[in-house]
Every structure is written in C-alpha cells, then in structure tokens.
Length: 210
Image 1 (cartoon, helix red, strand yellow):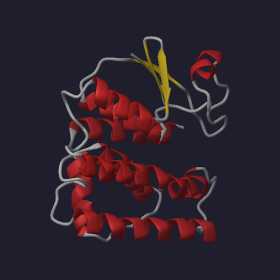
Image 2 (cartoon, rainbow, N blue to C red):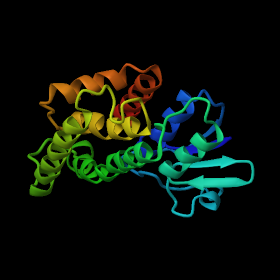
Image 3 (cartoon, one colour):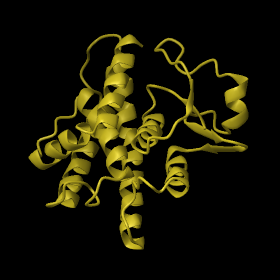
Image 4 (cartoon, one colour):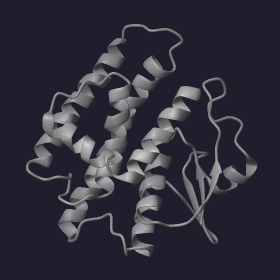
C-alpha cells in the first residue's frame, strides 16, 4: 500500500495512526508543507489519485481511496484482525458519529490555526477565534458526558478516539483550556498509546519547523 500524506494534516494523521495500530506496512509519499507555500505545488502524480487535491489518499493496488474516514473504514474491513470499531450495529453508528464529530470540529481548530499558528505576531483572538474556542468548549462538555465511566468514547479504543483526540490535542496547543478532569484523563490515556504518542510528537516537531 502507498499513502499520500502530509505530516501537518490531521486527516492524514488519523490514517497513519490506524495503519500503525494495525501494524500494516506501507510506503509514504509525503506532501511538503510550509507557512510560505502551504501545500503548493502539488505533484501531478498526487492530483491523478486525489480528486479533491487533498491528503490523505491510500493507494492499494489499482484502488485509490480519498477521505480519511473512508480510508479507515476500508482498512477496518480489509484488515479486521486488530479492530478499531466496536461490535454491534448501534455501537458502530455511535462510533462513526463521534469520529465524524472530531472531523467537524476541525473547522473551529482551523480558525485557531489561522489566528495563532499562522500569525506573524501574538494578538488577541478575533470574535471568530473566540467563537471557535466557545464551540470547542461545548464539544468538550458533550465529550465528558459521553465518556461517563468509560475509558474511551465507545467503551473500547476506536477510530472515534483517534479523530477526537487529534482535534482536541491540537486545539489545546492553539489556546483551548480544558477544565474537565475526565476529558484530560482520556487525553492522557489516548496519548499513552505508542502509535498516538509518536504521531503527535512528529507533528509537533514538524509544526515548529514549518
């Protein structure tokens, strides 16, 4: 398998973590990113397999798959030996909804990236930035309720934890303060997984050098 990836892409990170958790070998085609040029220029070979011009794209034989959620569902179906979905139709629906919610909240994180990470000098958040923080705080409250007495979002460790973790972990770096001890403990629990820890640390190093 071949993965078109970008080290600073949360969506690509989701797939890299799943591949690592499942211990699947693959070749990486890394899309470079910098603050100056961002994702440009994009190679023709990449655009040939990525209809949206976005990472990640997984190429498995003649099959090219875009969208991180679709890729991870494909990997789960093809390589179920290490499962990252819960058992049962209802539990899987809940898992998919939380995985999607993690992706959806990246919109708020994107606003913070623009105002904090891409800023040339420190400045107070705009009204949009403050609204993004508020949205993420409300999301944290819902996550706390979902966790209840469980160690993970769906009971066992799943793709939902991966997606939501990546969103909130980087939101923290960009200014989100999480007050919930339950959610903070969950973040520590997910971070303690070697695949997740290695991925998070790689992204932090790359972001410092961007």
